[in-house]
Image (cartoon, helix red, strand yellow):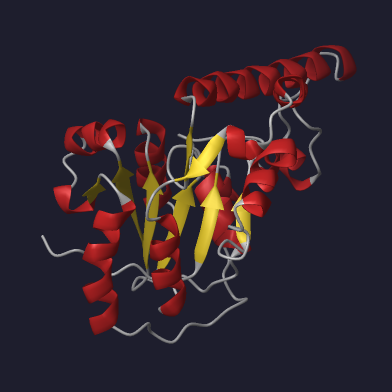
Length: 252
């Protein structure tokens, strides 16, 4: 199977763009993030709404959400700078520079909190210059494996998506693969899950997805993408005309 040239690439953050020096911390933080978020919405629904209507209103995603207390508290207690918690995955910058040279629009999404964590990582490692669009937990109502983070990122990129577009979504976990497959059902373009590492690779095999989209390092991905991009210039692109429906944004 020939690898489809990506016209847009979205990266997962934890475990993909950056890796945790203590990997277990990532899963603990994400679990506490989701639990804290759902508990706060439940009590708000129970005591403020009188147990009426949806627990998480549809309009909630349109307003600025409060920070997740549990996640913020953990990062405050640890009192460690982000460079002692995570580090960019080897080969990341070389790959990002290659994609920038070929004018591939980029975005980054994460189930983690942006304030007090994700934005600090982007600033500390100077990744914000590569990712003009970022989506974190407080920017959405449903986290991966729901496709909402990917759909939100594409909407914020303001690109006119069509059937010739190929979106790569690169992630290291099962939820990343499932989210990309779900997003593919809601858009006029192709959304291809790209596994980064062994954990996501297992899910790719389970879903019968080509091993051409399984990578163990960014060095390997660079070597594969460079000749593809060098031989195929980017197509003309219109901006500021994309419309992703509310239904698609909240699907799943």
